[in-house]
Image (tube, rainbow, N blue to C red; front, side, top):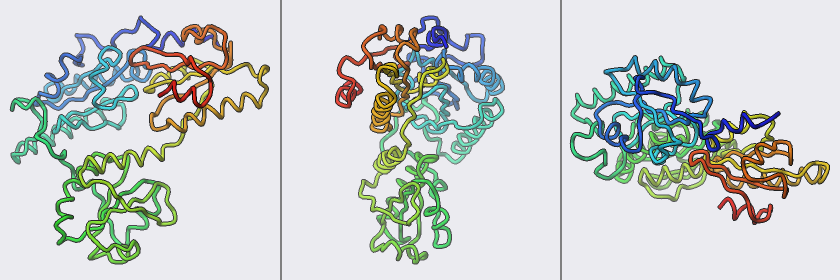
Length: 390
């Protein structure tokens, strides 16, 4: 399949990409110059889409996003950030793919990921839930950081972000095996005693971490003075004791958590442990434009061009692919895309990346957000590729 049309659609090589929204839409255009003032320092609930003009999923979202913006007019704000033009806006929020939707509600410093359906109704419902939270907080006198009129500019006064105690899963002797040991999730479990002062001080940090890790890592708490069977099984002798149960555990083994006791310490540890369990990326052959489009939505797309199979034989081809799989495993925490093409099979792609139809094997790393790419100058070896990607 000729890659010329499909490849040039990809934003980092296309100069013809245009924003998906216009001033006549109810969707508000957000930029690096107005984001703080309009979103962070405002008292409104915001739904913000981070998109790239070339992204097919982003284009599919446009009519529903516009519909949601119109329906929420006067109730909540709906905005959109073109990440190819305003990359710095999405940087602090770890935007890795497009479209990414964030909900800026009660605490503007900590927006929530929107992972619901991409329909106007579902997105409106999510916004209304956030509006209710803000209203209830104001009624109780705990307005949080939903507005910037207080002169703080959206910056906190230090300490942990507020968490929801309900996000900490209550564990007992009767539900522990089903909830923790029989699950495929990574769990951090606190064994506590109600009278323990250190446990009381940990409680808000644990709740904050649980809220931040929701959907990725589960945090539980077990009263060891009541549920003595599990406390005895894991030889709990002091409080609080935190145990780590790896993802996919079946034997009931646990390790001791030795990290810090602040929410940020717990979250950092949990995310790192979670990343260890991410499966290695698949190294996909480029057989059409959709493969490159999908790869371009990653933070980085690593593109390899391998010698023709007649030049290396099947064994040689497999050695190269295994080498790429090993590199993918090594850098899997980065959540990059990995693709390959046979020499000469995608000539337009080679030309676009300056490979030039010679010197195989070859490699290029493409950053679609910065609309830049770099080619491997060193050897196509573990050492050479490591140095290049590093």
